[in-house]
Image 1 (spheres, one colour):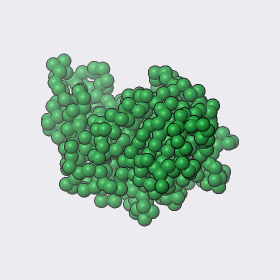
Image 2 (cartoon, rainbow, N blue to C red):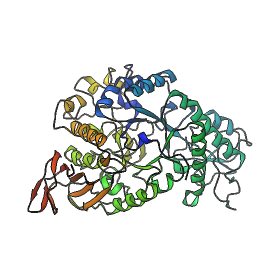
Image 3 (cartoon, helix red, strand yellow):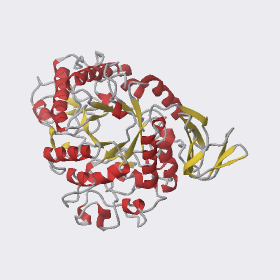
Image 4 (tube, rainbow, N blue to C red):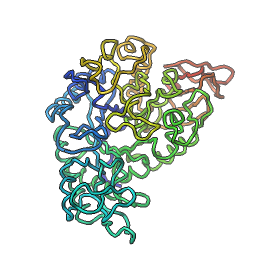
Length: 520
């Protein structure tokens, strides 16, 4: 395992993802930008978040919302400039908030100069080329014969980091130490070198597990990131790498400080709050634990978390997101705002690094029926635009997101007249936003509620009851009806929520939650 352990400040961090075009519009053109985000930093400071992760904001044709990068060394003009990023980072630092950028490492846009060169130069090996079209390969758009390997969309040619093993049926495969893969590894370092002086804390790496192809158990990809970690430790001590990998037990030993539990890897995360039955009919069915029916189970999540926790202990962290720009918000399908209090009580008291997706802290919902926006429709049944609608700040025009005419907004504002807003919830002591702020403050002032405090599960059904560090007892009941669990002694002093201790039973109301102080 790399010698550099995570910086101490990361231990109990609360992350917050900003999707730039939808968070705050600073210049009135209808699209969110860095200046708008800077203007909202006081809100994030009030909320108590420690790290802001900016979804991809580099120059792009935006045919996959910026995850098709055409220039890694420039901020997309619609978001501002490098100087705007510097101002944002400096202003965040003054409030005790660190900033992460998003590194799309495995592919570029087909408009990137690297690719525009490669399509006419058979000796260029930055990308993966076959002599003729085969499955997943796209016919060459230039004079170069053959076809290139795509990552997701055809407009995202896969960068060549080599193949872990040869295949006689594909003689064009190159090993990981070939000149093309070596060039791309150097390019990753050059990108990091370029942006670290801005003052960022590090990078979240998009699809970090995807680099080396045909890589059993991701062994060669892990070796690549292990090498990257060693270089970072020497060149940029303290630089943080967060993986979109979905397997902390593999990614953290490979050199990442943090990895997310993800909707696209295994069943653990999806068994918590998957909305696939409503928003992704193509996904396997299954009732998540955070469902009003009370028919879910924590078995899969607890098994995956326990395995990851054992492997990463002391060397990194697993992160648990409320959602992100690729999968539905917590408030989606049959899960409404009524269940958000219980969900966030769990998210902010469980021993992972919690990651809040912008707007989830007020219960913004996944909006259906939207048009495709910048490649948001991944398949006929799922449109990611639903989790990318503009932040709902107040009851003014465009919910306070932008002064532009409504028809010029990046995406429409949620049309629900009862949509939640930051302003209304800041004024309501019983709101979801105020609860989340209280939970973050409690977590910050009591390290036993953080990522490394001990955890004892007392009841793994409804309600879910667990003890943190011998000092706190937490109970969450995400089903619609009351639930009770045996408890051998009174739970202590109630800090947040409501529950009752009756005849050695802890009774939690439907959609209820409770946090007790059991210790001194």
